[in-house]
Image (cartoon, rainbow, N blue to C red; front, side, top):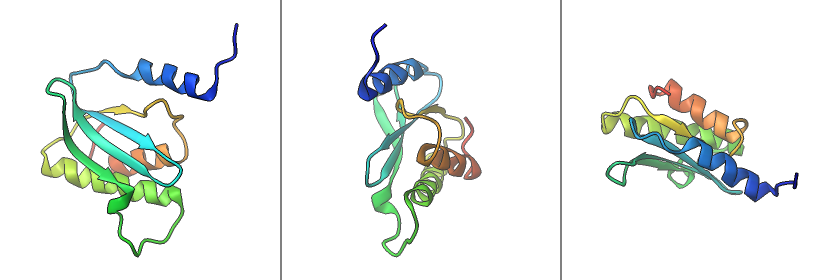
Length: 114
C-alpha cells in the first residue's frame, strides 16, 4: 500500500465529510496566518454567514488558537443573525485539534449545535 502525502490524505478526509445537505455546512479553512469559517447552504449554493481572522479586532493579542476561538464566536453571532441554530461541521480534512477544535468549541459556546 502506497503512503499518502499530506495533501492527498487531507483531500481524502475532506471527501468523507461532505454530502450531507439536511443542514447548513460549517466549513473551516485554515492557513498559516489565520482561519476562516463559513456557513454554506449546499442546496442553493450560497454562503449564509462567514467569519474571518481579518475581522478580529486589530488590538487583539494572542496566539493562533485564541484567534480561532474569536473567529468561532464571530461566526456564532453571524449565525444567530441569520437565524441558524444547527449545522454540520466540515473540518475541511484538517485534524480535529488545535485551531480547528478551538473554533468549534467557541462556536458551540456561541449557540451553534453540531
